[in-house]
Image (tube, rainbow, N blue to C red):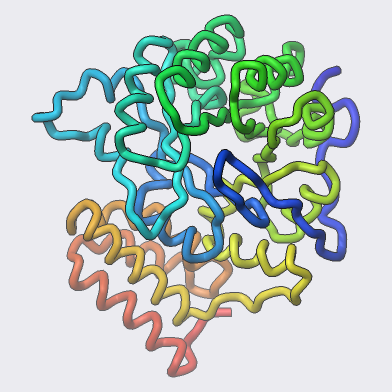
Amino acid sequence: MTAGAGPAKPDAGPGPTTAPGLRLGRLELHPGLLLAPMEDVSELPFRVICRRLGADLVFTEFVNAEGLVRESPDGPQRTRRKLRLAPEERPAAIQLYGAEPGSMAQAAQIATACEPELIDINCGCWVKDVALRGAGAGLLLDLPRMRDLVAAVIRSTHLPVTVKTRLGWDRDSIRIVDVARMLEDLGVTALTIHCRTRMQGHQGPVDYSWIPRVKAAVAMPVILNGDVFTAAAAAAAFATTGCDGVMLGRGAIRNPWLFAECRQCLAGGPPLPPPTLAMRAALCLEHLRLAVDHGGEAYAVVSLRRHYTGYFRDLRGAARWRDALGAERDLGRLQERLGELAAGEASGHAGE
């Protein structure tokens, strides 16, 4: 079948559903809400924030296996820094990507020494610099290489190994059911599927109809990813596809509170009220503090810029605030500006 056969995406129907829970090795996660690995986004500070807001499991940014293996322990540690995990973000997974089984095996050994709860293999990144070099979604064009690479990682660690991939390279080469069977036979603990092809990138409709087909073919947990932007959509994904977990990526960037909203919906509770301006500013300040602790003042000021839209989305004046915060280069002044935003709500100047 091709993408587009069958229902593409379940409607976010009324009423909550009960998620079955997700078992990954020794981990028992409920309801099974995961933060996706995202380059320059799922850094340690944001992972901690998402855990506090209700994510059951968080994933690091993509870690380049070649860079990790070649990086000198006495050098600047740009790649190894991505492996750093904080106690308050656990359980956490380290995601590796690469095209060579040998390098991936060595990288898995280095990652294992950092004691994550599991190791994830990126077989789904669609960007040219990754996929066209035989890594990420490029592995979907060479399943024997994917098999050898995954097997090498599994042999190199005692930790559970999971895989994240896409439906296929394009609509004419969807082999996700065969891929799932192959991975389960190798000993993969769980499979996350972004329900688009590599050629789609993030464009066009997702096709969730493949999730129940994969579920029928394998016993390992299957995690759904792609276009889950609301709590109702997460509940519908669980109810309609039978997935074992839902991974949130761009939805979490747009709305860090989405994890809390999903948990409330899945538990059958009433919708949570939108966070107030004071809550948004306070959480942004906490994110800033975590970023300073993680990478220093300059890193913190720059790294927060990619999160302001999510923290202040859907408020009157948000664009003006985002521009002002993004232009600020001084940490102390940035902290003052965020404090002023919180005070503005108390005096009746909050946006709508």
